[in-house]
Length: 185
Image: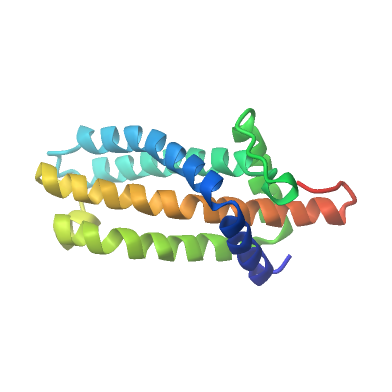
């Protein structure tokens, strides 16, 4: 599967199943927001760059778990339109690994396009609320309003972009299964 095929296919599936997919994505995003906010609050008034990097590593980890779970839950989307939450993390991990082996270019396209949309949704609000230094460096001690604006922009960006990459991974991994004669993903 080419990167273009994966992107076009993902957009078509998301349009067709938008209600179900984005409702699930919102639930995953809100669950992921709890540790996301807690990790930021732990270093709220801490000027340490090392602690800020640690917070980012934890945030990457929780975001990756959310992405893999959503990917696993959406593996049935191309075949029967069903969402399968049970066992989703294991299925999502296997699907992501298969997609990377099948077409790294398609996965990279999904990551880059999803990241670009996420940045467009997050950065303007976060920079306006926290300032450029607050976005790039240690969080410092922003006001509750600034912190809330930045958090809400992160939630919106995750809600919108997590499903796109999940479906790109599912379609890319599914193309490998079909070529191997194993049916759909």
